[in-house]
Length: 127
Image (tube, rainbow, N blue to C red; front, side, top):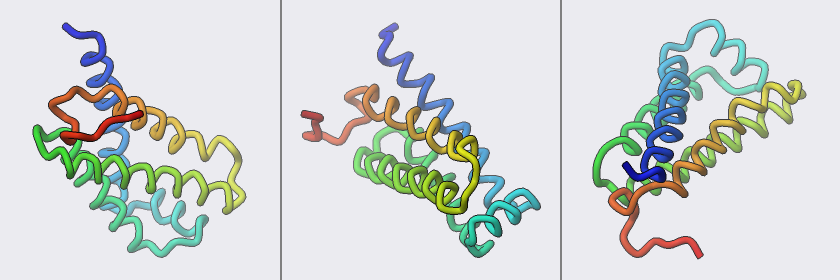
């Protein structure tokens, strides 16, 4: 089996698991989510919006085809994760609080670079 393809599925699987778990927690809105939203200064309903889009984005990344939708999902996750890290920073949280979004962002970037041709938007290249 192609090592690049194996790497793609490993990082994409880890990323997807992390985002899916986070998305489900956001949708459920338990005490941890309420506390996190309050500390950052976001309304609780925002967690449910994020949760919906996290789950939808993971489904888009894992589904076959859907090249354009996958690119939008990758972009949306970049916005989400950089926003999460910045939100922790500006809320005055310790650096460790920013590590989860940064690690997930690194997995996402690796997934994007390792994705096979069948999962790319035709004509989109990295120069």
